[in-house]
Amino acid sequence: MNSEIKNETNTYFNRDDFSWDGMYLMYEGRHSNSKNFEDVYESCHPSRVGMNVPEFVARWKYGRNKASQKNKMIKELCQSGITVEKFVKDRDERWARN
Image 1: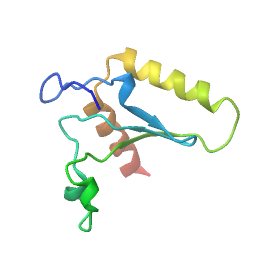
Image 2: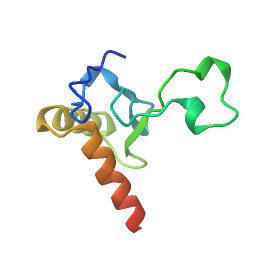
Image 3: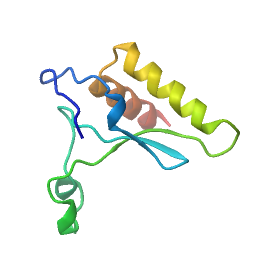
Image 4: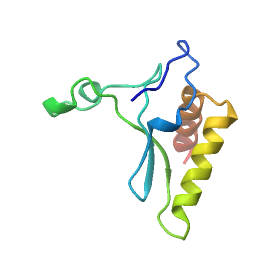
């Protein structure tokens, strides 16, 4: 994890901090609102103490060209200038409405 925190509210996406397991795209970089595993889960495994919980970005369940869709999304997030904090806030607001 080599994401750089610009200041308290402006952490920009870093290409190296994304992870993808073939279905879920997650952002593992630190940002001003990131939480550690021990803060979120009561029975956190000792190996996870001090690690931040990855942020969900997207899911591709069906379809072809998942890798190219993932690469396009990462490129757009990194070049858009949107901060991780704003992305997470907007995502959480969308989830709350549904």
